[in-house]
Length: 484
Figure 1 (tube, rainbow, N blue to C red):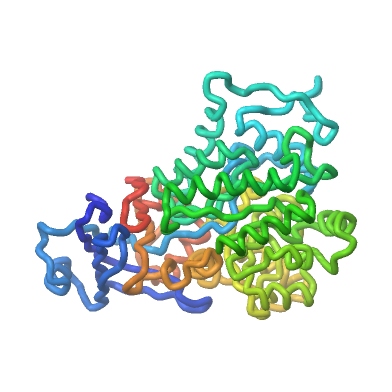
Figure 2 (tube, rainbow, N blue to C red):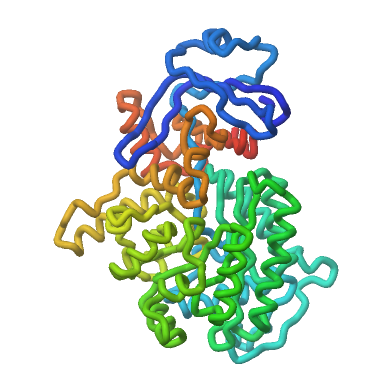
């Protein structure tokens, strides 16, 4: 079937399932008409009374030969595309490689050397294969013929892999390299994934290795602007691809750098992404590096980085005053349960965040997280919430169920990336970012016996499903992945 991005309209017929609210699993049978007349695949009309394809053509007033048509399988359904609000594209080769590290050790041992290598250079290892970290190392060319060959391979793989898992939107951290960051933007735009691309800013001499940091705050700002302008040339409207200001986290940046980036985001009305309160050791480091500030949150607040367009990854160890500041500023939290468990960072109190009026979404945090699957993040969010309930005396109020997890992965994600009302559902006017799920395929890890109700089948999909259940994926009406 041709995609709906060639000027033609398309009808999608069958079962449509979404989670418009934390306790609302909406299961509907019918059809939607997708139009790309404005250059973007938008849901033009819906009809939930239709029971045959012929009725759909008639209801929408179109001739069969004039539209593309797609119908779900018997055990299939259309579901809104997943939104990953925190993923490090540059770390994809390290998924599952974190040993017994905690956050700060993991960064210097595994992360910084890998990220540096994607810019065409990498630190030399000592005789034991260990990188010298902050002691200052020599650097060598990774590839004399194409210095970005490694980045090309990594970024191509991670974009295709995330699409295959139904991730239609991703907020990506890249590296400090401007050319490598620009390449990530080029590839995301080429493959059709909705993406927010951030060139990582880090220049603090006490926490960043000499081989992998900006020399000055002004250089960090200039490099950020260079990538921003490249991205905006690719998509001037920012509809499919947009830049996002990305200070790695407070300890990696000098105070002046944070303030320059905050002003940049304000002046150009840009999104911001960074980390906050992920790890106890990190909190101590922030207090040591920024003794003049009231809290970790205050560091960002005083720099002008907390806005309604800001995504803060993790947010595990925030106190009540910090929560109030984040709520007042309208900033968002990306919950990354798999990464938090893998690195032993702690349990994010999602219920407390939501009860305090803070928008929450889900991130994979690859490669702190071991998988690019947001579906896995949904089940990990459910599991972590139960552990949090246990350590709070068995209080079930902390529990996140399947429906709420799916809501966080779609509607919650849309809120956090500034696309509320445009992504995450099947209402007229929404962009058609959708995955088609098939539970009965030959290689499906989900066993369906036929007597399960549809809400039970969704439960089975969340707990047992993976990319083998993803039949097709569309972004803005354009088919960007087919797993047939």
